[in-house]
Length: 117
Image (cartoon, rainbow, N blue to C red; front, side):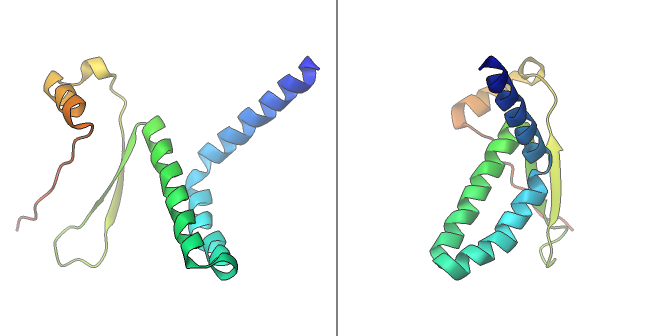
């Protein structure tokens, strides 16, 4: 009985690790191929709800891995976005106290960038 429990726990841990490691590919497939199939069968609202679920899972994953994704344009006339992913590795005690207080007040910090020529 305990052996089956340990085997199940090990299989679950392996599955979660594989999903976590390949999440970007899985999310891309879910948002495109699978979502199009869902739309054909269940309609547009089901596809929209599926996109929301995948986005929510991605946000939780990013939060757990302390990563942030930033989309920027080099100048306002660009027709494409640059995707930059930042990973934090500093423990909370190494962050400036002003930044920590701002996060506690607002829950997040949003930085808006301006275009300069």
